[in-house]
Image: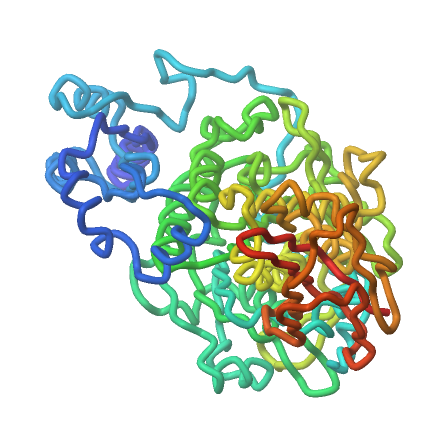
Length: 557
């Protein structure tokens, strides 16, 4: 009997082990015209409004996977469908190699098939395996132990000059952040999240790992991540974007490591885009899998090889701001960042300690094709977080998992500025996310001397805000291009200078950075403007004559 049981076990084991993961890429989307003519069947109104604001057109990438194609693959008896992606027009399947390969000849609508085990692919990119050892699957979530009153969060916010954004009224209001993580237990009950619950700031979510709507479950990792952005205990703790709204998505299955999680992440990012999300934080990263044949090598970290990084790049092209943890492998034999942190358009965040010194565990760049990663750093060594059980503040966890959301919250606060800037600028608006990211990078302390583990260093969001406003100022007419405003910064007033006497009967408008008009002088001939009544801060100055306009940044000390 024991021999029979052993035989059955071995038979089952080898049958299970013969199952391979693969992505089936489809040739087209036959119903794309119908969907593109009815955009609300693909995207929410908020998503469409965001696309219009950023001047990003809808295209076939936004169209869902063809239902007929999907069902034909799903109905194959020897194939299991695990996920799908409209962005990549692909279906993630599992089955035996022969059965998977047979699909290519059976269905004319299949373009090609990519196996997770790259040695099974007959064409396309193959990677030579490096001898370095990648971290085990627990490291991607590793919490390495050992006019707000920010309390315990004071250092991690003020290190980045995030308090300056808050003082300017940039607290994330009007922004939607998606957290794609491993679970959010007790977010629905803890007092530290009472504020966002009472203000209806949790808009919803989804558990892609279990295919249900219970996202207040699974790993506590996501709860800790969310706390650094949205947690609030009066006079004791404030997150970096306390007034943002949130979607909570589970894509990570923390007890194992499989390539399916890459596909689930892409599905979550697609859902976020369809809902009109502005910023996505991902404190996850992928390098190695339980099936070693599926693991990535350093050569794969070029931003265009892994499924998840390809998805991330498409997400950025849809107007999403993607923020990702660099990883916690800096002091291990495998020291590199993971995917999708390698994607060119992703803002990759490493970690420092409370003094601004690099954390040894923070993963290294560059990417395999030589790009700077991580770009920026935040406090990831012993930051203040909310404990998912007690709801109390804890400072005993570390990882880029936390420097990333701290940064994502401030990115959302900076992006809050966008609505006014878009109305003020004549620049090509599909570059606004580029302007924002570049403004943050240029504000960092090592921008002129980036290093493999530091990237550009620790950003200064006061400088970043000023850079961002400056980079999106507008000149609508050649005559006004020589107009100067001085002194700037100023204390009580500023002067307007132009090499012409023709600037008469012009209009002066001053807006705060939230777009509220605080001063207007119509048909003015005065070259000196009193602003002594305004509070210190950054303002937008717009000078107009007929159809000619100039918009620029004004700083009042």
